[in-house]
Image (cartoon, rainbow, N blue to C red):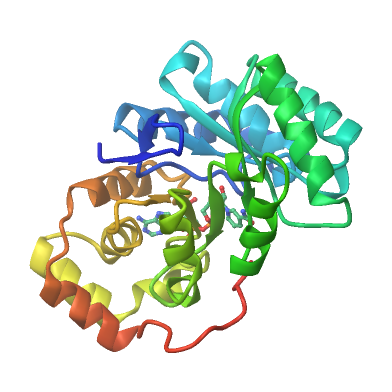
Length: 279
Ligand SMILES: NC(=O)c1ccc[n+]([C@@H]2O[C@H](COP(=O)([O-])OP(=O)(O)OC[C@H]3O[C@@H](n4cnc5c(N)ncnc54)[C@H](OP(=O)(O)O)[C@@H]3O)[C@@H](O)[C@H]2O)c1
């Protein structure tokens, strides 16, 4: 599996698994956990979840999936902005740890910026790090100016990742956010690398043509594209085992200059700054 290096030097898989919409129905939990386990067996050992997903249900599915293999998995979870106060972060983390059935979250993200001062959230993250409840912390849905503000705060430079929307039809972050994060050695996590509404993106003739050349599928090409820089971690979500297997092949696809040019022609990179796309 290709890897991405965190600011502290630890490497994590460049291809992980999302969990949004898992844990919604109790009857699906076992199959969802099995899908995640299959993904882990195929090398996608980073799992992204959040207290928000199914109101904790997705974290419970992750807990089920990692039972007995916890040490093989890098767990990312997120705190909601309304819980991002000094005491709120601690309490939210304790609830998440219980649902995840673990003693530590590897990377804990602020899901998006809300009303609590960032400095307070950072202090709460640092306290959790000191007590061993989390190993790293980061943010999500932060644009370049938000990242610069974060970096200016005490311990703000300890941010280990920024998770944002990124797929061929949503490339705004390439204008200045991706370069800024790369300059600070902060990996970007690409969420919804299949566009969330997957049917629309997979209809792209450019992705289909590139996929044909590689004997791959348009989904695998879209995922390979999102992680092509070496500094981006892609986290497609798949509950269908066929999708999981297909997505795992993305790590083996090396896109050529001609492939990238064809994708650029159909899905152009940004020519100017645009607001951050958010789902
Ligand atoms: N930080 C944030 O604000 C934020 C926002 C959105 C998402 N995220 C994270 O990023 C993860 C991924 O994003 P996402 O779930 O929005 O969207 P996504 O990964 O782009 O797409 C997921 C959808 O694609 C389908 N799919 C997966 N692999 C496929 C394949 N090979 N062929 C065809 N369809 C396929 C899935 O179906 P099946 O499940 O049926 O396989 C599901 O319906 C989330 O699960 C979550 O962990 C974070």
